[in-house]
Image (tube, rainbow, N blue to C red; front, side):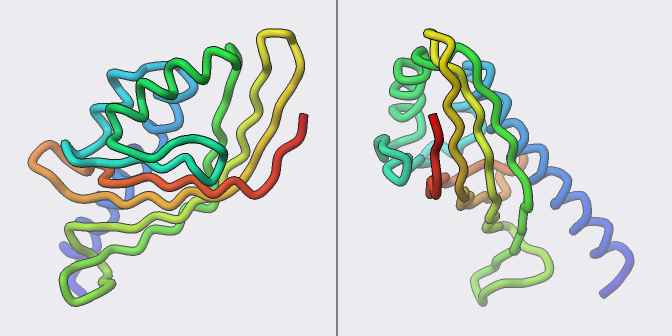
Length: 147
């Protein structure tokens, strides 16, 4: 692998990391316009693994905007990000698509003051577009909760 390819791969990994961080910030800050902008036009989100809905990202953003009013305080911590690049022939060291597996811990507070914490794993699919990396899908797999 040449040094140029290595640098491009590092830059892609940083851009994907920024995309995932942007996702967490958009949800935590109730920035639903920003949330929608993170996705491709046909992007989808699946929150059924945490008791939610699945559908087009714009529709899911509307659902999140309404549902998360129950939690005026929330913070996503997305860690252990594993990025695998893909091309038509399978997984590669670089490419125009990527699958990201990442664990999360999500402390929130109900409007009543009661704390709620959940954790699990995200499966993100990202694609390179003319506007940079965008999410084509997000799937939530909640593994535990405490309140």
